[in-house]
Length: 199
Image (cartoon, rainbow, N blue to C red):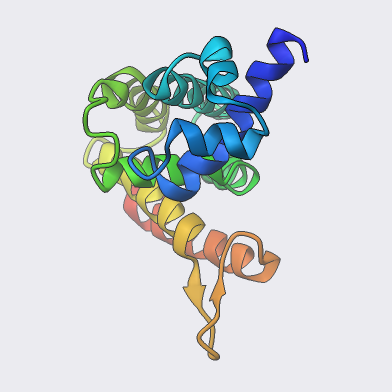
């Protein structure tokens, strides 16, 4: 196993476990066992549990940033078209559906997981919020609280990604159910349209 492939394998396993169990509920030993390695090999490739968590969150951030920067670029190119703001919402929902570990990682943090790693929000969340808020603000009136509208999209999308909705039989339906995903997307369009005053 090369150093790069070993690191990626460990990060993949750690991402899955941190997303499922949280930082506080995941041990380095559990990650090593799930990766089929010993703890010394994990430490060699990535370091301790904190280092591993930071690498997982950095990788998740880079993927999210790339998706949002592309979507914001499209919004700006559309020159303030209201439908472009909804396309940005769609791109975010698509990103979360394709990368379910990302909303899971952040949901754990919202529940005070990894409380001793306090700088990630200012390092990762705030810059992406500023990027999106500034781009959307250019498309709406001054009376709109764009920051809360963006937060609402994040809260709703992460909540739906992690919890879904209950069907008539009490089963959870979420982003892996195309019909429910379409229904959620339509609801989010109505919600965002109303919040931003889009026609």
